[in-house]
Image 1 (cartoon, rainbow, N blue to C red):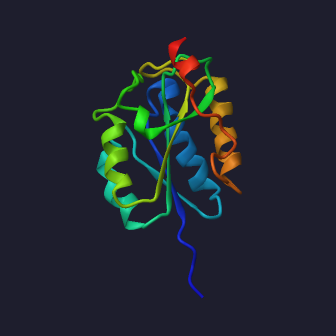
Image 2 (image 1 turned 30 degrees about the vertical axis):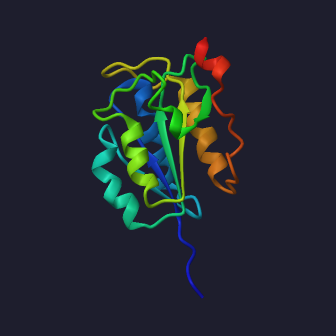
Length: 162
């Protein structure tokens, strides 16, 4: 009997930058209390540096989780079509645009999803807001039994225009 290949949650963000620490908080939660069928890899502010670790697991699915300024209310969560990331102006504190990482991972992984959490405050030494903490807990809870889009809405054109 073969062991099922785990899916990977690749978290992105800087824990010292307020709500930008949403990704690292999720990785912390998954490390403290693992979710069956998932492995967490904390990519920090330079997730491109851990792409090889993601690939080494040979997952069927990668869920990238990051704080992303989508023009929504703080704590809102949306799936963003990876093909749209390059065309969208998503505020990011990271060195390399995430679409490059997603393209790289998509070359060898069947499904690469990007889940954005709308931040409120991103600044050095600010604490994470309660709305973003709650959003991270929501993502964590939905990993167990994840199907399709995990129950999260796709960022729509009307929301992008707001």
